[in-house]
Length: 487
Ligand SMILES: NC(=O)c1ccc[n+]([C@@H]2O[C@H](COP(=O)([O-])OP(=O)(O)OC[C@H]3O[C@@H](n4cnc5c(N)ncnc54)[C@H](O)[C@@H]3O)[C@@H](O)[C@H]2O)c1
Image (cartoon, rainbow, N blue to C red; front, side, top):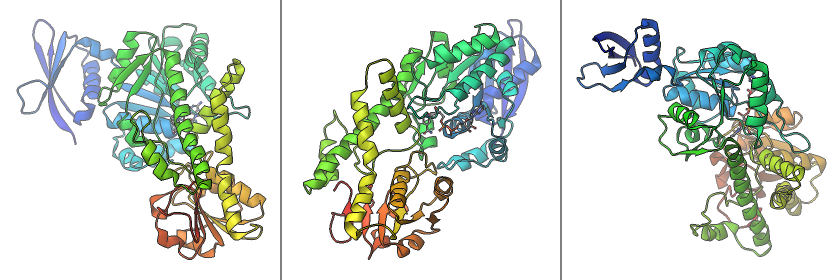
């Protein structure tokens, strides 16, 4: 809701007053627009809320160059959530994507991805403060800082593909030819050295100068909780070349109540990889202990509840099951493994993590076969297709490994997911997708639980069926009609 503010411009000789009406969260952006339009020189400016005698704040002309308008290249999980989150917190945001359809959807306030709360927040953003375009030049020239959030997908050899980063850097260089001082922030996950050795180099080559700034701010959001994570980060890692850039990036995130960690650009890049590798290792450790527990008739969840009480270890990321998937953990672990091989410093631990994780989902198929015999011709229900609950993302989902193996063994797969069936149908167009869990379970000879959506954690759904549990859907012990993967 718009509110009224009074602006008092001091210029050493007198005070000039002006009015401004806007939502309070966009006060800084609107104030700057107003000051630029007024074209009046000033030494300081005070802003008063209607009816208040004390100013809300007082600013110097330095504020005119503060990074308030942010362009974001790439509107996937990271780009769109960053854009929506920053705008919600008071920045003016211009998102950019090459995908015209996505751009149209976003401008019509329709989110192209499913993330809790994203649709509502996107719908609430005023078009004056949040727009999306395919015109990168316009977006960059109108903004103070540009975030790069394009994909860095894995290649077959495990290395990461930097084609999108390259393309964006070249274009940015051409655009920044006549715009010195611009701040470019890499948010995509990139192998250490990429921001300075690739992004900075390509921009310099194409701009014909190096009067711009680069920084790296890795993103740690979890899909499914992306918006919540973005708005309430445990920390913001800021990789910079100097303190001025650190202060500018802190300003962009001024409204975020968290700690800011200043580090070198390449260290910021590595922090992202090391964090994901650590989490993937924790999960895999729990899975390996779980596989041993299974043979010894021990419930690994009880074990990890006990282990996790040690504050040096903690309980998070020790939920044993069918292994990790998703766009980030697999690709980031693989990229580090690839880097290790390339520099002849093999990441032996991560190589082992990878092997355990690849085998883990197949255990579900083995257990199903053990329970109902040869799977050829059998109807097998696969419950939960997204790589984890709360997202429609099926990239590198363990469900893909399970379905592929079931099909290889000649089973007929019927699958269910509350939101990810459409995406999985692009991977497996020829299997059946149920509209409700019951649709699928009723027809099945055996049911495999892969991704533990809350609505699939009701034991009544599986009554009378053999249920192979890959992620502790049910708090049960292995027995008649029920078998846990690691318990
Ligand atoms: N998804 C996550 O949970 C997550 C979390 C942390 C970090 N990351 C990292 O963030 C980066 C982005 O990941 P994502 O999942 O958002 O990717 P994504 O594939 O969902 O989205 C990337 C977007 O960039 C667009 N794009 C590609 N080339 C472009 C160009 N030249 N100009 C404009 N737009 C272009 C694509 O159309 C797409 O919309 C990756 O490096 C990823 O590793 C992802």
